Length: 319
Image (tube, rainbow, N blue to C red; front, top):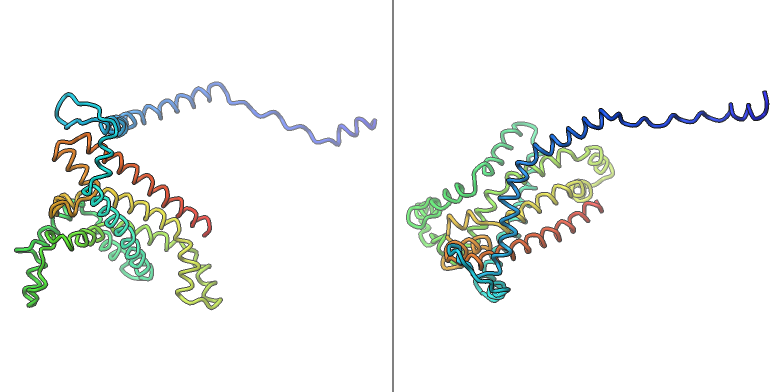
């Protein structure tokens, strides 16, 4: 055997060329993809007609003086935006939205995390207490607000009746009609009805924390507070991001509670941005003005959500 033959024999055999997909298999894949697109198409078309197209149309309407009824309207340029940004009523609605949105997001997350940590320590009847915590989330905001409207009624509400029975007549208040406390009352009601989902998300993440890390920290002498700060809290970064984002979006679009409980009153004191848009667009027949306010609300929601998400995502990376 020659040296060339020995060298050829010593070299590894070249792998066979990759098998090309059969034409029949490729056609079958294309048919499956077309079938999936056909299944998605009805929902996509409906979503476009009901959400995307009206949203784009509202931008056009925000540049007009349309009243929402007349078949004709005139383009007024940026006049609606100028009127909005110089109106005290609008900035009052912005302030209320910030208080209710950010306030409810922070309070609900703090309470939900504390409740989730208590539920995580339970060894018996955990399912029962989970159900109790989640029950308020099963009630729609409209129904919950209606119940609270009767409970807080000045004349026959349960709160004032209880205070009177205890001899605390001086503490009775018009809870939904006093401009000094109405925002605080709304904040309490919103926090009461929005904590169920947040608690369960925290509980699910707490139960996924590796116990090996917790035990290692305790063996090293870490206290409970140190274990939470350096082990548990970083592991909850994803849950914090999800819950804060959901709560902020819910807070920016608060409508049901204001509609049922106060109608924006007394006066315009308790109006939020969402209710302000509804009121001027449908109640005062200024659809163009209301559309401009809706565009502003959209920009605010997108900007705050992106900024908050970017900050919280950076925390997740560090964790």
